[in-house]
Amino acid sequence: MGRTATLAAWRPDPGNPKQQVAMLVDTTECIGCKACEVACKQWNQNEYRINQELGTYQSHPSLDAQTWTLIKFIEREDEDGVNQWLMQKHNCMHCSEAGCVTACPTDALHYGDYGVVTLDQEKCIGCAYCEPACPFDAIHVDKSAFRQTAQKAGKCTLCFDRISNAMQPACVSTCPTDCIKYGDRGELLKWAYARVEQLKAMGYANANVYGDKELGGLHELYVLLEKPEVYGLPVNPTLSKRLTFWKYGLQPVGKAILGAALFGMVINWFAARRTFKGGHGPGEEAEAPASLHD
Amino acid sequence: MAVRSKVKIKKFSRAQVVFHWVYGSSWFLLMLTGMSFLWRPDPGAAAVGLGPLLQGTVGQSFRLVHRVAAIGLMASPLTWLVGDFRSLWPDLKELLRFGINDARYMLIAPLHYTFGKPALPPQGKYNGGHKVNFYVVVLTFIGFVSSGLLMWFGRGAVPDGTFHMAQIVHSTSFWLGAIMTALHIYLTAVHPFTRRALSAMTQGFVELNYAKAEHKVWVEKEIAAGTAVLVEEPGDC
Ligand code: HEM
Ligand code: SF4
Ligand code: SF4
Ligand code: SF4
Image 1 (cartoon, chains in turn orange, purple):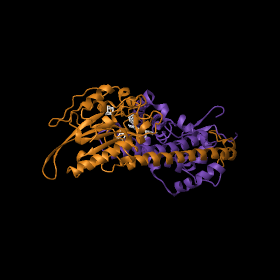
Image 2 (cartoon, rainbow over the protein chains, first blue to last red; image 1 turned 45 degrees about the vertical axis):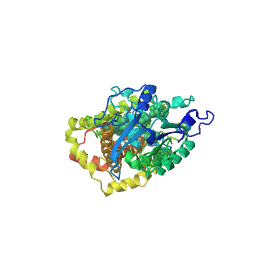
Image 3 (tube, chains in turn red, brown; image 1 turned 90 degrees about the vertical axis):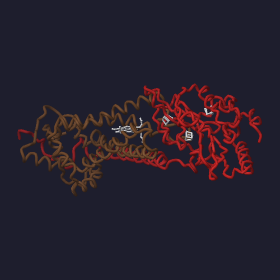
Image 4 (cartoon, each protein chain N blue to C red; image 1 turned 135 degrees about the horizontal axis):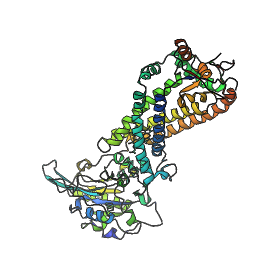
């Protein structure tokens, strides 16, 4: 199968921000070297955290606010009792319908150009509403930071600062096997489906493409050897119903009722001003003011 | 203005007044700082609404103030408990008793306070409206405190669905509470007739004439029992 040499020179069209870019990870080509993790930390100046889980080659138990990409190691026996050692480069999927963007109360998280979900840490207030809203556990807020103002969300930015300057994402350009490919989303999908056909012909019956339709289309695509659930990836993920109810049900209804109530008060005020002239109530005794001495 | 009486009757103790304002000011701070979370429009659209004003350090400071004010809100009942324990049970007992008279009051009140009629059924120390306000306050207090503490300390530790449920409970309490607050402030500080009740929560006293019109049952009972505390104010009130 063609290496990314065909895609290496690829740049998004600077005049067409609507163009959809993506990263495609062909997990069958990944050797688990973690060069992408290092490149990501280095380019984004993220802290190195020694956080290794014993008994696995995985470097961190999960993504965190300073760890934006992670090679997940899955060791298992397949249906035929054959040992399998699977790797999946995990990071933000840049969802077209993103839970994190829906939950974010500021504009820190945003649907940016080229289909990238951007995160502006300057704007972030560290509320962590994005954390439980992400179906992929891909965004985190630094809880270890002592000062509240240092608590910010962190996630893969698809190296927006690089790709908008005609460079490739740091992890892509460092990958020694070229298993991370970067380019036009449509083109990558074509490549991915062709690769899956090839894998099936080689006997990998469960090979599949992940990310084409999920959540309106992800901008991180995968060629997987096994079913998504084997990698811990959600099958047909959806936005949390509670989250969408909070955002699109409660909020507009609350605003409408509050608005109607305020309007009713204004109307009442105009009418009541005439009814209760001088603040005098109808049920009030009309005789001279009550006094202690009469 | 001839009807304005110079005689006032005592309605609330100092501790009750202090409680009201500690609760009210904490609530107001919480409302202002919390509101920012609910004013970001559809994220697909260009940024308009309050969100952009509250980014970065401004928003983070708001979150800090929200926590400080939350402690104030949660601690405020102590002022009443410690300051005037004796009034607690009699007042709560009356507030918790919602009868047919209160229901009729609630039905008639919107018309009465707009057109002056039909007449309202005579009320005790707390009318149907006060009672409904009290229920909303208690309900939202429980909602705010339980969901607020969960979001504060349970972040990352509770399942995602539980966190979202807390967001829903907190928001629902907010909308319910915000509407009630708007009405409460309107009736006690703006409405031409009922704003005369405001002094009850500033000085603890309310005009006797007003009290007779609005809380007939209570005034008559207090006078008959000889427990009414009356003062005469010099000059205009
Ligand atoms: C008294 C206990 C309260 C506690 C412990 C509390 C705590 C919290 C916490 C932890 C959050 C999440 C955002 C963040 O981490 O900064 C929050 C959000 C919020 N708070 Fe409070 N709060 C309390 C009372 C109130 C009150 C009285 C109001 C309004 C009058 C209020 C309005 C809000 C709103 C509107 C939000 C965002 C709403 C949402 O996400 O659904 N809170 N509060
Ligand atoms: S994967 Fe998570 S963090 Fe990334 S865009 Fe989707 S919801 Fe947001
Ligand atoms: S932590 Fe930051 S990015 Fe996440 S929802 Fe809050 S403001 Fe948005
Ligand atoms: S695209 Fe950039 S931010 Fe995302 S994982 Fe790769 S190096 Fe890290």
